[in-house]
Amino acid sequence: MTFFQCACSLCSPSPDVQSSFAVQAIGTPGGLRWPDSNPFSVRWIDPSRVCFEPLPGICLNQLMRQLEVERGWGQIVGPHGSGKTTLVNQLEIQLLQRSAPVVKVVLHRQGWHRGFQQALSATRRSGTRLIVDGFEQLPRFAQWVLRWLCGWRGCGLLVTSHRDVQLPWLVRTKASLAWVQQIVSRLLQSCPENLILEEDVRNCYYRQEGNLRETLFALYDLFEHRRRRAVDGTVPAP
Image 1 (cartoon, rainbow, N blue to C red):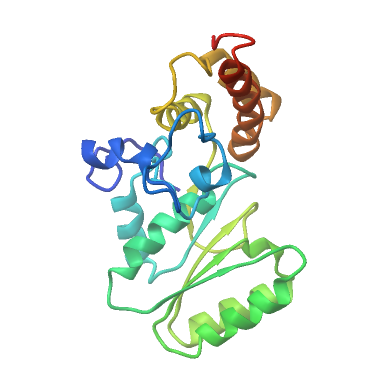
Image 2 (cartoon, helix red, strand yellow; image 1 turned 45 degrees about the vertical axis):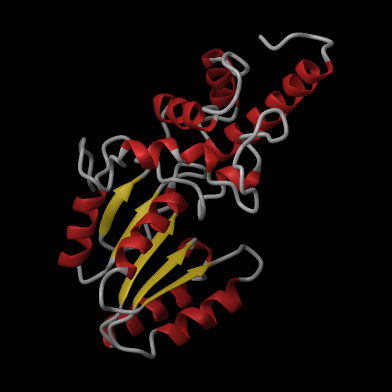
């Protein structure tokens, strides 16, 4: 497992990249605009679209080197809403810049059969770097089959999971209040100051038991309530 601080170019984006975080809207040329948009809506916090915010103590460069040593094998383990999907998406971007083909499969609780078939098809090409988001949702026999096929055909196997699935350890993710506050601070860059306070973030974070995703959803409701009241003029924004 990997725990350390880093200031490499991958983990510390340039000021231009950081400043563009709050204006990269999906389908909105002008970006996030007050008071028309809620910065905690799905289009701003979707792990596949937002700017990567490094988890404390995690270095992408080191993780990529570790993946190369393990021939593309590794597991990212952590609870719900701890940044697993965001991290594996960023690793996917880095892997796509290599010469080997990359295939990503996202498993859903009730549709693992389809994802499993996609993963099996990906292993037909030797050297493929296979990424499985939600690997623990596969039955044990399906996990075993996929591990065996990847090993036999020389494919990489990078997975996210809520528990240890007997693959080489890459990193264990765990959200922290400071990390969540940093993410919220970036999301609020184009909004009035003090509309969402640090105390609000802290209360939502502990109420959601450290789940980043649920914390952002709770802040969406709070922001929407205060935004509407501020726009209507009934109560000034705090």
